[in-house]
Image 1 (cartoon, helix red, strand yellow):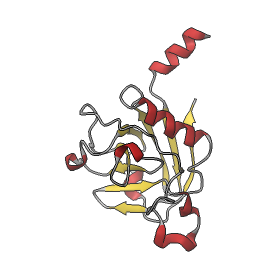
Image 2: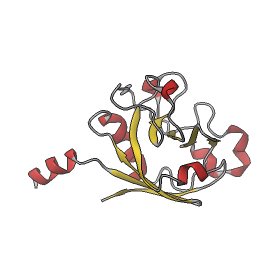
Image 3: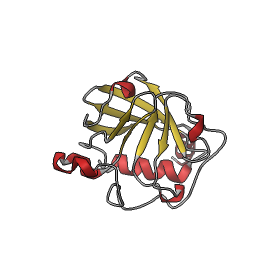
Length: 165
Protein backbone atom coordinates (compact mmCIF):
# COMPACT_ATOMS: atom_id res chain seq x y z
CA UNK A 1 0.00 0.00 0.00
CA UNK A 2 2.83 2.38 0.80
CA UNK A 3 4.20 2.10 -2.78
CA UNK A 4 0.78 2.92 -4.21
CA UNK A 5 0.53 6.00 -1.98
CA UNK A 6 3.94 7.20 -3.12
CA UNK A 7 3.02 6.61 -6.76
CA UNK A 8 -0.29 8.45 -6.34
CA UNK A 9 1.51 11.44 -4.85
CA UNK A 10 3.64 11.74 -7.99
CA UNK A 11 0.60 11.99 -10.22
CA UNK A 12 -1.13 15.34 -10.60
CA UNK A 13 -4.61 15.37 -9.16
CA UNK A 14 -7.44 16.31 -11.49
CA UNK A 15 -10.14 18.61 -10.11
CA UNK A 16 -13.44 18.62 -11.99
CA UNK A 17 -15.64 21.74 -11.93
CA UNK A 18 -19.27 21.26 -12.94
CA UNK A 19 -21.01 24.57 -13.71
CA UNK A 20 -24.32 25.66 -15.15
CA UNK A 21 -22.44 26.44 -18.40
CA UNK A 22 -20.59 23.12 -18.69
CA UNK A 23 -17.80 21.14 -17.09
CA UNK A 24 -14.07 21.71 -17.10
CA UNK A 25 -11.19 20.03 -15.31
CA UNK A 26 -7.74 21.13 -14.25
CA UNK A 27 -4.60 19.29 -13.29
CA UNK A 28 -2.87 20.43 -10.14
CA UNK A 29 0.77 21.39 -9.73
CA UNK A 30 1.40 19.43 -6.56
CA UNK A 31 5.20 19.59 -6.85
CA UNK A 32 5.37 23.39 -7.12
CA UNK A 33 2.56 24.30 -4.72
CA UNK A 34 2.07 21.32 -2.40
CA UNK A 35 0.53 23.16 0.56
CA UNK A 36 -1.74 25.30 -1.59
CA UNK A 37 -2.92 22.36 -3.67
CA UNK A 38 -3.54 20.31 -0.51
CA UNK A 39 -5.55 23.20 0.95
CA UNK A 40 -7.73 23.56 -2.17
CA UNK A 41 -8.19 19.81 -2.54
CA UNK A 42 -9.31 19.63 1.09
CA UNK A 43 -11.88 22.38 0.41
CA UNK A 44 -13.06 20.53 -2.69
CA UNK A 45 -13.40 17.22 -0.87
CA UNK A 46 -15.38 18.92 1.90
CA UNK A 47 -17.86 20.42 -0.59
CA UNK A 48 -16.82 24.01 0.13
CA UNK A 49 -17.25 25.17 -3.49
CA UNK A 50 -20.49 23.29 -4.21
CA UNK A 51 -23.35 25.70 -4.90
CA UNK A 52 -21.17 28.80 -5.01
CA UNK A 53 -21.40 31.26 -7.88
CA UNK A 54 -18.90 32.99 -10.10
CA UNK A 55 -18.33 36.37 -8.48
CA UNK A 56 -15.98 37.82 -11.08
CA UNK A 57 -16.03 37.37 -14.84
CA UNK A 58 -13.84 39.71 -16.86
CA UNK A 59 -13.68 38.80 -20.58
CA UNK A 60 -10.17 38.03 -21.84
CA UNK A 61 -8.93 38.29 -18.25
CA UNK A 62 -10.25 35.88 -15.56
CA UNK A 63 -13.22 34.13 -14.04
CA UNK A 64 -13.13 33.80 -10.27
CA UNK A 65 -15.01 32.00 -7.50
CA UNK A 66 -14.50 30.84 -3.94
CA UNK A 67 -16.63 33.17 -1.79
CA UNK A 68 -19.13 31.12 0.25
CA UNK A 69 -21.44 34.15 0.44
CA UNK A 70 -22.01 33.83 -3.31
CA UNK A 71 -24.63 31.16 -2.56
CA UNK A 72 -26.82 34.03 -1.29
CA UNK A 73 -28.11 36.20 -4.14
CA UNK A 74 -29.00 38.87 -1.57
CA UNK A 75 -25.29 39.44 -0.88
CA UNK A 76 -24.21 40.03 -4.49
CA UNK A 77 -22.77 43.46 -3.70
CA UNK A 78 -20.31 41.81 -1.30
CA UNK A 79 -19.30 38.77 -3.35
CA UNK A 80 -15.54 38.38 -3.52
CA UNK A 81 -14.82 41.24 -1.14
CA UNK A 82 -13.42 41.46 2.35
CA UNK A 83 -12.26 38.92 4.91
CA UNK A 84 -15.55 36.97 4.84
CA UNK A 85 -15.07 36.13 1.16
CA UNK A 86 -13.14 32.98 2.04
CA UNK A 87 -13.11 29.77 4.03
CA UNK A 88 -11.46 31.57 6.94
CA UNK A 89 -8.33 29.41 6.87
CA UNK A 90 -5.58 30.96 4.71
CA UNK A 91 -2.93 28.73 3.16
CA UNK A 92 -0.22 30.43 5.22
CA UNK A 93 2.56 30.24 2.63
CA UNK A 94 3.28 31.85 -0.70
CA UNK A 95 4.07 29.19 -3.32
CA UNK A 96 4.70 31.48 -6.27
CA UNK A 97 7.12 30.02 -8.79
CA UNK A 98 8.63 31.18 -12.06
CA UNK A 99 8.03 27.70 -13.48
CA UNK A 100 4.23 28.06 -13.52
CA UNK A 101 2.92 31.21 -15.16
CA UNK A 102 -0.43 32.77 -15.95
CA UNK A 103 -0.90 31.46 -19.46
CA UNK A 104 -4.42 30.97 -20.83
CA UNK A 105 -6.13 28.32 -18.69
CA UNK A 106 -3.92 28.77 -15.63
CA UNK A 107 -5.65 28.19 -12.29
CA UNK A 108 -4.40 30.47 -9.56
CA UNK A 109 -5.09 31.62 -6.03
CA UNK A 110 -6.51 35.11 -5.66
CA UNK A 111 -5.61 37.12 -2.56
CA UNK A 112 -6.07 40.55 -1.01
CA UNK A 113 -2.48 41.75 -1.23
CA UNK A 114 -0.55 39.01 0.57
CA UNK A 115 -0.07 35.71 -1.32
CA UNK A 116 0.41 33.81 1.97
CA UNK A 117 -3.11 34.85 2.98
CA UNK A 118 -4.69 33.34 -0.13
CA UNK A 119 -7.50 31.07 0.99
CA UNK A 120 -10.33 29.79 -1.17
CA UNK A 121 -10.72 32.12 -4.13
CA UNK A 122 -9.63 30.52 -7.39
CA UNK A 123 -9.30 32.08 -10.81
CA UNK A 124 -8.84 30.79 -14.34
CA UNK A 125 -7.07 33.04 -16.83
CA UNK A 126 -8.91 33.54 -20.11
CA UNK A 127 -5.82 34.78 -21.98
CA UNK A 128 -2.08 34.84 -21.37
CA UNK A 129 -1.57 37.26 -18.46
CA UNK A 130 2.16 37.72 -17.84
CA UNK A 131 1.28 40.82 -15.79
CA UNK A 132 0.03 38.43 -13.06
CA UNK A 133 3.23 36.38 -12.95
CA UNK A 134 5.13 36.59 -9.68
CA UNK A 135 2.07 37.88 -7.81
CA UNK A 136 -0.16 34.81 -7.52
CA UNK A 137 0.43 31.11 -6.94
CA UNK A 138 -0.51 29.15 -10.06
CA UNK A 139 -1.74 25.80 -8.78
CA UNK A 140 -2.93 24.14 -11.96
CA UNK A 141 -4.00 24.34 -15.57
CA UNK A 142 -7.26 23.58 -17.37
CA UNK A 143 -6.89 20.31 -19.29
CA UNK A 144 -10.49 19.53 -20.28
CA UNK A 145 -13.38 21.75 -21.32
CA UNK A 146 -11.10 24.72 -21.88
CA UNK A 147 -13.91 26.62 -23.65
CA UNK A 148 -16.12 26.57 -20.53
CA UNK A 149 -14.39 29.19 -18.33
CA UNK A 150 -14.74 31.86 -21.05
CA UNK A 151 -18.51 31.22 -21.18
CA UNK A 152 -18.96 31.76 -17.45
CA UNK A 153 -20.57 34.97 -16.25
CA UNK A 154 -21.03 36.55 -12.85
CA UNK A 155 -23.77 34.64 -11.04
CA UNK A 156 -23.30 31.33 -12.90
CA UNK A 157 -23.26 28.48 -10.43
CA UNK A 158 -20.59 25.97 -9.51
CA UNK A 159 -22.84 22.92 -9.22
CA UNK A 160 -20.07 20.86 -7.65
CA UNK A 161 -16.35 20.32 -7.63
CA UNK A 162 -14.65 17.02 -7.01
CA UNK A 163 -11.31 15.31 -7.30
CA UNK A 164 -11.28 12.64 -9.97
CA UNK A 165 -10.11 9.48 -8.22
